[in-house]
Image (cartoon, rainbow, N blue to C red; front, side, top):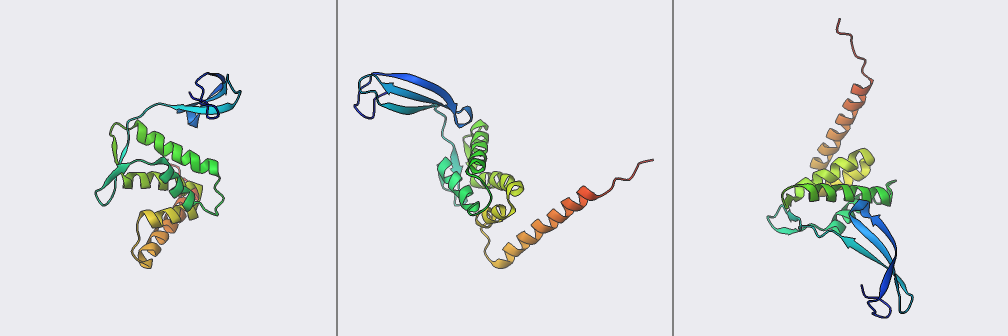
Length: 166
């Protein structure tokens, strides 16, 4: 590693820790020439994941793009940065562990929605409105009505008494 201050290659590792849920190694280094401390990260070189868009185009998976989409849906909601990072990490881990290297954008959208729904209903609806690409207010209203009906059914099922079989 080259020192960012003096460009020397002589340095020593001061501290080593895992980072990003064990997917990276963070190392604190100290330059032996100028005593500057700096941080480096080591990642496993993974095969690139291709995202197949609705238009038929294909692009590399972009973790930052996913994180921005989740953050945007959670803007001004009681969802922490840590929760957004956890959602992004979970989805990236799932995609990395799958055998194929191509995944449809709809699959990623579903993964985000599954994680947002129990976390925050407003963030869930915000993300769904973009993901599902509603064409008019009526489609959006139908989605919200379905979501409310399912919520009422879940509450009713939860509070429903079980009858004995005998």
